[in-house]
Length: 298
Image 1: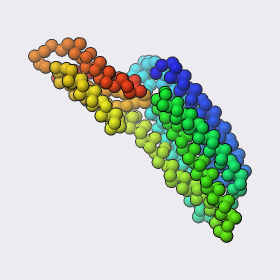
Image 2 (image 1 turned 30 degrees about the vertical axis):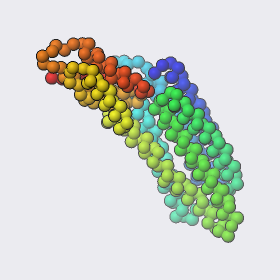
Image 3 (image 1 turned 135 degrees about the horizontal axis):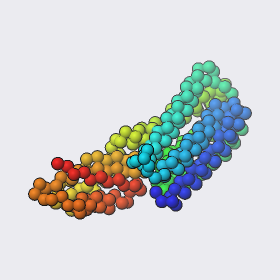
Image 4 (image 1 turned 30 degrees about the horizontal axis):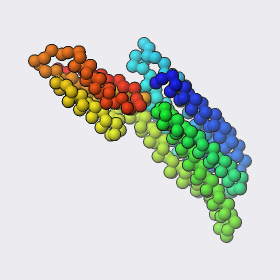
């Protein structure tokens, strides 16, 4: 990753951390003031996002360091490790919120000042949407797993804010109707619906990161691209070549191929280099650092 890309990643994560801190403080203060578990959850989620963003910043700097005696294969594995931690923590927060919503429903709900909550919700939606757009746009330019995970966090926060604001508008209208007695259930019902809906996002983050940590096969689309590159190498070579292993680890793509030389020929270095260069050329459009290993098979 070049210096410009590293700087863009650092700047994006830093801005994300600043906004996460701002939304965390605002959410906790307003949530406690109006006694809304949904807004408090929003604040807690932003606080968790801040801590996880700081973790991403630290990981970004650490990953960029050169290989050493302790990390002879580099530090790419730390990127999916950090994303796995982020997914697991968010999953715990959403899971606890789901539990709290169920308990509140079973104990009769509670009343919330919907007017103040609605105003806060509108401001929160605008702010979160802006940060989500900014981080997602940066990810398209930088193509970083850490920034992609950050964009997922802000996507959740934006959609959460939209749902919360809509819920408080409904609760306010409900309080003015003959069904005003049911308004006390609006807050826990919103929390229940939001938690159930968003639990998929951190779960997907966690599963995707675990696939990389365990060096499992990457997504089918990426695997197909790699197969095509190996097929191109086979067409240009007189030797038998097979794809023996592939894994995406953070911002790196590891490709192992087996080279079966003809028994009647002497193994030539240029044949091996040609195979490696053909694969590299076919995969050059991928926003990943390529690690191509050619093994001489018997």
